[in-house]
Amino acid sequence: MEDNEQKIKRLKQMLNDSKYAVFFGGAGVSTASGIPDFRSPDGLSAKKYAYPFETILSHEFFFEHTGEFYDYYYAELDAYTAKPNAAHKALAALEADGRIKAVITQNIDGLHQAAGSRKVYELHGTTSRGMCVKCGKVYSAGEMRARRPVPKCDCGGIIKPDVVLYGESLDPHVISGACMELEKADLVIVGGTSLSVYPAAGFLDYTDGDIVVINKTPVASSYIKPALVITGDVCLLSGLV
Figure 1 (tube, rainbow, N blue to C red):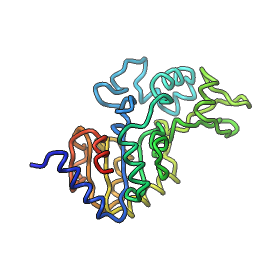
Figure 2 (figure 1 turned 180 degrees about the horizontal axis):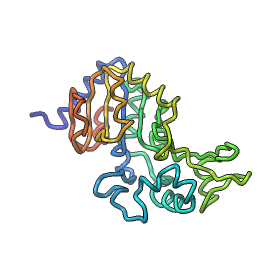
Figure 3 (figure 1 turned 90 degrees about the vertical axis):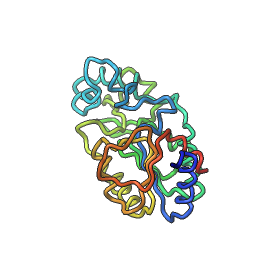
């Protein structure tokens, strides 16, 4: 039976043979940077608040309980002190070498770009900026932070983080771009996600390429037939560089 070191060597060969490889990642990519995931025993779902996190992070709650939303947001989601980890850095290096063509992420922390990745599709938006709901003016995360507790625009409107809340639709331009990348891919490396959350998990329907999974736990999707499964931390990607 292959150990993870042997599997990484096999993945490295697959990557070298690939003409168009894409990375598809989830919350597990950023946990090594100190950012909690959602559903693990230590994740956001385990923390005790007056409302479930799905309620707090909803479109309706943002507009009806904006102060409470931002209390939670700055306590749990504002990742301005987080730094890219070995997985982020490896993916940026692989893109620079031309071996990874794009990163598709369910994360909102902006750490792929901070590590140097250029072609990044953020399915759920990003905490790196916000937009006034009244006039549309864009603010950086730092500018929003300076206007706490509830960041307000110069026009008086509330600034909303540029993240996709529950009850909101994904950005059609981001969806289109991500789907095009997956359609072109002959290899998709899936990392740090159990593929249990839709619609993001359904994106892999768009690829006919080989799928390789790197995750600490088995994927939840029964229809995916990976060519290779590596059970472990996504930081194992550093072995590909």
